Length: 305
Ligand code: PMP
Image (tube, rainbow, N blue to C red; front, side):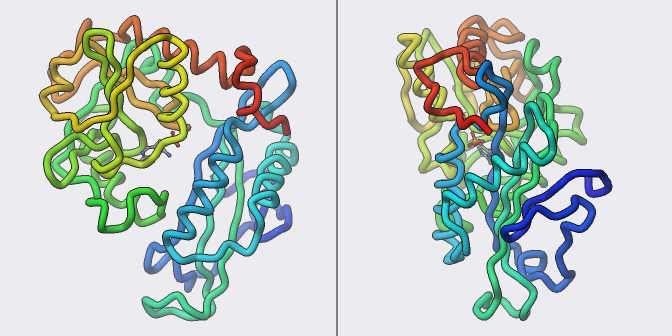
């Protein structure tokens, strides 16, 4: 990913892709205190548009606030940086990665005395869990790793260090031949995927774990809430157990990268019809209509670059 042509926005400037470098004594590289976002831009009839840009930028600033990091740019500058990066790389659609980190003035656990930096990169990225998975559903394994407790690294912040837990869970699941991991919270209730929120459907009602289970407050998760309302599907946030997932009618993951990915199996237990369920398909279609600019009700969620 590092060796290619293009531009990356770094601390206020568009720099050549290959020159977007940091020092090995960067504080965040040693201690993991940093925050990032994953954002997508889609092709729409009005041109390339970033989906829910304001909400992603707001979450980035919230993550930084939780970590006591002061981003030296305004949200408007961060929004503009993302539009500029899409344009500078000539992308029709793509994935954006804003990241804020602590500099290399000094080491030691206390970050005090270091500068805070910000970068935005963007590149083309198709279906995160595969095109096939979007149609047939993916195979998921309950992780042996517990999801972060809400009083550990702060689960409402999208922090760099939270992802060690996600990496361990994803590697374990994929090494065992599954597509993705599902993590349980410290009390054993369902939390989220390694990089996705979870939804299950039972008897026409849509359920998702409430955020006290340590799941990230996903922006796609919120988009699904709106879609459910539009489709007349009741939606309930509650504690969910692993066996409730085994016996649900349909299940799917959501995320900026994963979009709406159906789940066909958990721990070798087939879910519902063992393929993408009919309600999941409707929700998936509604999602792609919104991000693709086909549903004018949500035109405000699209920022044309
Ligand atoms: N949970 C985790 C752990 C994630 O990494 C992500 C992806 N950002 C999500 C949930 C989904 O969040 P969003 O829909 O905002 O991308």
